[in-house]
Length: 375
Image (cartoon, rainbow, N blue to C red; front, side, top):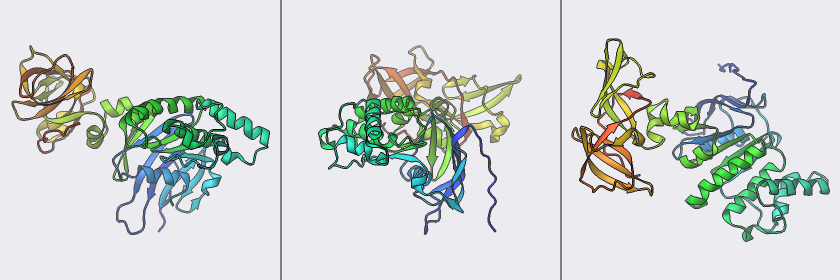
């Protein structure tokens, strides 16, 4: 019996996925499993997650390079991919930028960029090449060859080539993975500015959180083929929808807590003291005995010598303007703290700390957390 797909098409969304599933032959678990999200025209969406989570497979399905087992892919209102219908990749008007740039080494920059618009008259083609090269900051470079350019310049040529045919959607698959760390973050900001200037709608895949935060209007966190959350960076960090998102995004740990309701007020009891900013917390009845785990980010923990709670420094990582301290409480639990770098304490020293949590986020109680790994 064939499952009936109920359309939830939203005309405000330029790209819309509805319960998308991609299944490889011989594998028990789908590579992409029931993923739904929408991307507005002119927005940049980013998919992030650990290796093997399905983000690149999803990107390839949107491009038409992987078959859809069930669900739908809509582009500008048109169904371009479903179990019984698949528009050929070349008819989807999608541009792609790959991690290895895929430039033709025997062609100069101008001919590389013009590769997808050779149907245009010569004068119009030359004008479009000049236009997109100026957009990516490489005007006047038509006669250079790829080997004469830096890695960042080659990536911008690849972006110019993808933009030249005026695609209705641009897909970028880990485009900065071959570049060094400092260049990656800078180029991520540059690419965002370029895409915004081009008024392009883009879907971007990366494993790097800094790239995702620098580039995306909206970010999707994937794990084992499923989309756990599709939100802006601030919400992912401060209001994670699942324990996986809370653990994957940013620095933080889970500490044991108990919810109690007294005089119509809910208080979260922790080893660091009581937390009161619980506007979005569930009531104690949501957890057995009110016992739960609370997410504590490194920026929720403040170094305060006068604080009654003391913690031992287990590890310290110098970050220039700050240290990332790994601290152990007397209860044995560990927390992380960002501390200004002029507070240079020794490993083994006990310091005072207090919690300043603006968004109390709770999850089901799990086993006592282990010491966090080095970051």
